[in-house]
Image (cartoon, rainbow, N blue to C red; front, top):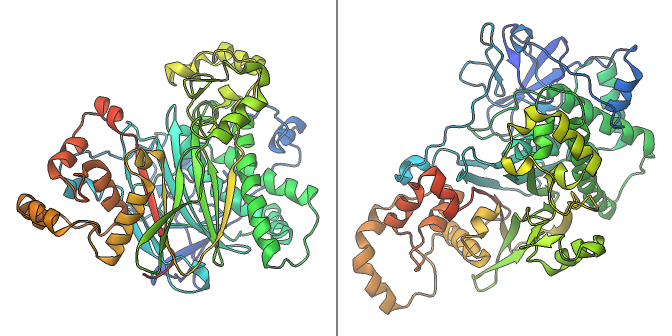
Length: 555
């Protein structure tokens, strides 16, 4: 394959790109989708031999303060991160995730433009994305997926991610992340969690090769191939911390775990379950440790906000769902008679789940009257499991120290975060323990709907599965009598004929969630009103909605 040297006038803003000046080699190979995909190598300089012991201990996860790191993006050569493959080139000609530097200015990334309009033809393309995966072992049984996101908050607090694992046993990853108290935590988790899953699932011998390559400053094989949305953004800072935290994770695996023997299929499935749990725990731990440093960037802001997460890992026909919070994964199953069944693969972690409520009360037996008030944790937080939200996890002394010494950060977050939660007696109250569901995909399992709670608050799961199934089969909703059809025909004939057809099924779901007329069709006037609500009113009627629909089998 031809090798090309990257140009020297580009700056990398990838969150996991280490700030060192290595030699950049870009290899172009035929991609699975029929177009060239750059596969990038990157040699990474390890910490200097004489680095202070405290700094090294921090990087190994023992909580020592992190030394502030500053760098000027406009003076750096463009470098791809060694842990990812590049996406298609951006408008400036640089690979996606990188941008041309502005002279004398620090690179700033603006949030996506939110075009909320009553015209469905305009809003539906803003965030929608569809991808068909090539048939073969590399797709792990996934035919493709459709996604879309409709914001309610400004800025939108939802995020999504999708990627293919390139190393080890492989697999395809999808995730939706519902942020609260701002988008910072959801944004960080959506960009970092899949790397932790990949590292947790890799065999130790592969991790050892990765560590040797980093030590010797050699090119490193990417771990993930991201399926990026047009509106997806790279994190503008925090790359140094993110990379070192991830490297510490694989170093600790090498130091503490024994080399595995060749695994059979059942052991591989068990390994995936433990890898997902480990990745969730470790990322939440790293977010907490990074927030305790002296960095002037955003780690503390990330940790003070929070997010739920629902992640799907599919490999060799086995589906794992790791859920944290109240987003959901629902399987669409086509029965022998052609009807559709909705199978829940997740449980909500909130006060509406009796088992989850009993878990919280059992962990804080002396606080039966205060630990859950008005169906919220300490009267404040709806989900009982989440990333971040250190104000429900740290000790009283640690929180008091933050409130006393970091007014600069507190002034930039919501008012609710600036004070200690009431009745804060026996932390931690909030857990980052994911609930894992395993399912072997069968011929009747046609698709999986992964969505944040904004969708499920508006639609029942059976209606969601019915709409997706009918869209895929080209049928209208069943159960309507001839008399109903005659009555509805006159009043709806014009608008049904003029209604735009959604090629993206996630867009189709959002349209029905907002504009359903009660008869399985969309009322354009209702849809227009819901889309044109002012920002300060929209949140009263709906939450951010993020949907990913994963195709598993032909219908």
